[in-house]
Image (cartoon, rainbow, N blue to C red; front, side):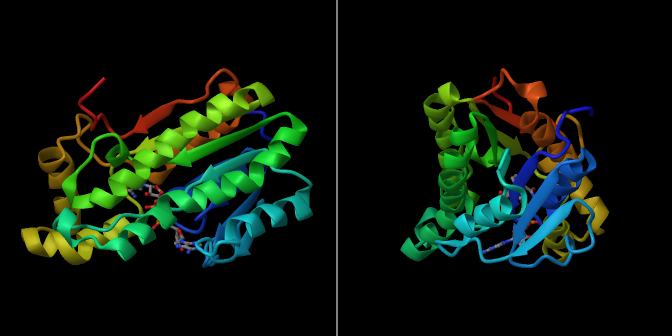
Length: 258
Ligand SMILES: NC(=O)c1ccc[n+]([C@@H]2O[C@H](COP(=O)([O-])OP(=O)(O)OC[C@H]3O[C@@H](n4cnc5c(N)ncnc54)[C@H](O)[C@@H]3O)[C@@H](O)[C@H]2O)c1
């Protein structure tokens, strides 16, 4: 991409799988020093240009620890990718108790709050930096079957806007990327073990049916983690130097609003 990211320091949360892993590999391919935090680092350990950091990012000190590790190894943080997150299917709003709400907010929102709070003083000091938070189409188009996830991702989008306003004058950009359904290992497993048997289809057939007939994606297929990573790398680079406070879909056109 010629993104000018060589030797930049990029911290990614939840980097061992799916979209986080694709981002880690894509930044490393640009010559960046990637610091990938995850509770399991099996997929990161042999990857060149990626420093695996095994830790619990839901612990209140986890995100700070990850940022500290990056500054200890490489002296700074240029880009933070708040990727950690995940959804739970809900039958009804009435089924989500306080503990479930808190857990969903912690995973999708508070972890990113903590990581941003740890990284921003470093970025402010050096007068530049980029934060990219992974939201979801669900954060802009609420769905009762993921009620708490939708709220958590809407919070992610809102925070990005606030950060862009407060820290833009200090040289820091903050943007969100909102993937639509994406073929991560977790999603494929869900189709394999749950959806395909229920619909009496093969896994590939069920995924195709879901994309074309259930979610009605105009492009007719689900995205891949690399599709999201390409935009995240762009937003982390100086090619995006005039872009902040925005949310971008990588969703095959699933959002039917302007
Ligand atoms: N996959 C999709 O279809 C999709 C769609 C829209 C948005 N998103 C968003 O993209 C982001 C990445 O999703 P994905 O599907 O690639 O995720 P994933 O489930 O493939 O990977 C999540 C990673 O987070 C790690 N993790 C979980 N809890 C942790 C903890 N406490 N401490 C440290 N690491 C922990 C896991 O080990 C895993 O490596 C999430 O924010 C998700 O909400 C995904």
